[in-house]
Amino acid sequence: MTHMSASTEQAAIRADAEQRVTELRRAARELWPSRDDVAALCELHAVLGALRQAEQELRSTNTQVSGAPCRSADQLPDPQRLTFPPQVRQTSSEKPMDTDGPVSRGTSSGDCDQSPTLSIAFFRPTTKSFHARHEEGRQSPGLPPYFHRGEKFLDAEASATGGGGAAFVSPYFVWDALAPYRGINKTFTSQCGTEPMPDYGLQVYVPAFTSTTGTSTQTEGQSVLEVDPTTGLQGTQVETITGQITMTQQLSDRGFSGGGSFDKAMGKQLQQQLDESIELYVLTQALGSAAQVSGQSSFSVAGLYQDLALGREKLTDTAGTRLRPTHLFTTSDFYSYVTRQVDGSQRPIVTPMYAPGFPLEAGDAQTKWSRFTGTVLPGGVLWFEADKIPAFGTTSETQLIVSAPDEAMLVFEGDPTLAAYPQAGASTLEVVLNLRAYVAAVPRYPSGTASIAGSAYTSTLV
Image (cartoon, rainbow, N blue to C red; front, top):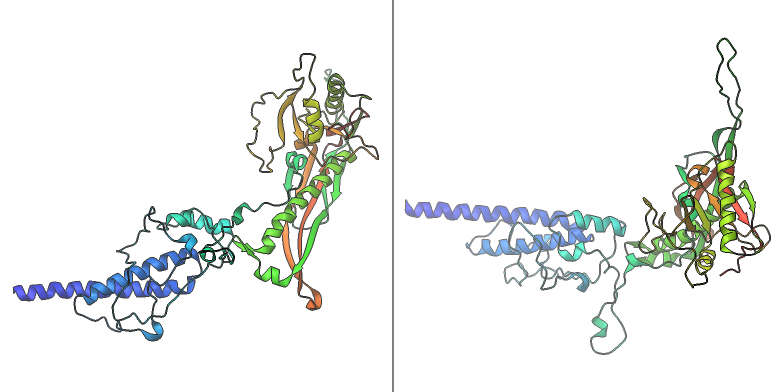
């Protein structure tokens, strides 16, 4: 009975080992077609290591799994030979990924050492964006720490110059920190009211009342006051803001950068100039119907405050508008000039003030608040820098814009579209890379913006 019990126990161990080997082989075959994805590659490496360990344990029982010795055409590679790029190789300070069983990274001397060598010299990015695959790495359990840090190692190439082992040292390209040639922020546009761009049409309209109704006290038995309003439409044409470059087909095909192709990097650059053009368009729309204030003839801080008060009154006193002014927009050079002015004791006259509820942005990430100076003027007006403000007419005078943009302006802006167009006829294999967006800016309250211009405020004040 003892001998039979031991045999039964050994058979059970053998059966468990056979089942584990079978399951690991199936998992490896399922992962193999997806090995170009870094997450699948990490998992495949673990599965192959566990499979090698399981086969060694199975052979130690002096048994053979059906079809195990050498799987010629169906052979799976040794995990030791499935090498990762140097940039993603695990260091001694990092823990190995978790698996359902032990992971063997050693060399096996079993019957299946005839498997072909597979060496992955570098990882070709997939069609997924860098941020999408990086987010998958954060959410996927069991991935090693190097993957959670992001895929900044993509597309590294060995150095071909230098002595010693320089040819084996891969450069490091931080593609996700690509530095575009920066354009001017959409400061004014980002403070306006917004609506999504409709899916159709080349005109947008906002219904508006153009005259008032009437109310009054009523004496008993007398007629009630009746005043009929008039209505109209505040509308504008949908504009196409666009730009493009021409590049070779080879650069489009082979110019990979972090997480995608070179055309995505160029799209990021084109977006800078697209935003700048949208800002100029929206400013032009707002200033085309804005109230005008004739400014001072010579600069002084006292005269500036007087003109700003007149600009605020344009918004608060105009019938049918009567908006509280919330913003002042000037060029950054003008702001620098004003804040350089000091009194007789060399103390600055205009200083930043705390604005409850309004943030001061850290850094310069081109966000809605990145151009808020932190300066709050009388009436709770926040001072912003908007460097795309056009000169007044044909003069060299800059314009100071007092506005309540969230109420006065309504901006319809569609998502930018990046498209590549192959050259017609393909005689020189060139591709036109185009970025475009559809925009419409409607002044809901034309007098909700006031422009201050005068010889005291020239573009030479820097």
